[in-house]
Image 1: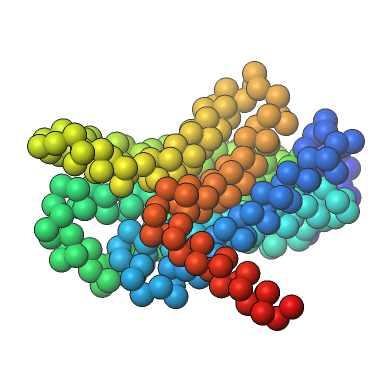
Image 2: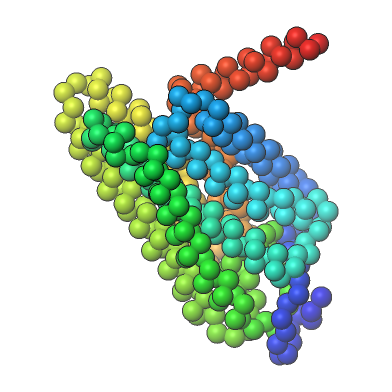
Length: 321
């Protein structure tokens, strides 16, 4: 472990994740909801993927985008949460520099991918409501595949500079990382040289990329609402709005904590550090856990197949017993 302050630059071989500062005595208790949320995330998203992939009737644009979202949720939570639990349960906070950069990279890739997938789902709802007769002609499997490739490419391209910026930094203070996973801003703030470019790139990526996605989603829903209010009957309007309700919930669950965290960091000098860390954890834990629950409860086709799956499992178990 490096001394608390040292003017000699060094290339960190390992970092020590210290957990949430000021809550060390409560780590075991904090880990319980974290663990339960992670188990719910794994179960819900794996079940959702299984149902969509095995039911040919669900191989439609909306469900294919939903399967992409479930895959991104699994990547995001599995990249971060096991490290959190290891720190909470065993105090196993030591992580190599390369592993730390890898974890940080895939967390950021997952975030940008989720934002882009939610935007693609907004486009899907726009076409379904505003141009329903051409829905299957516009959103073919080929187009969806290209959109998926574009989402992955965009996420990787915006995050490769992050790795480059971190590797260029010089460290001299400590390798103690006051966090429970390798988070970009936490790593950057350990550097001893000028971190202005690194900070501004992180903020610019968050505000411009995720902010632009949010603006385009708002525009899509503005056009959707205009089309809905032009429908002839109240029943038709309610039906159109119901088809968007699950997606609107997902939008709020994803963007609310993300933007709150961005602005909280902007005014970080007046907000305790442990609050910022908890907000960062909420971004990693809450949306991946709730997304499959929201779509499972609000989408009749998925709910019906979930019930069928559990019925088959229960029937199989009773026959075996």
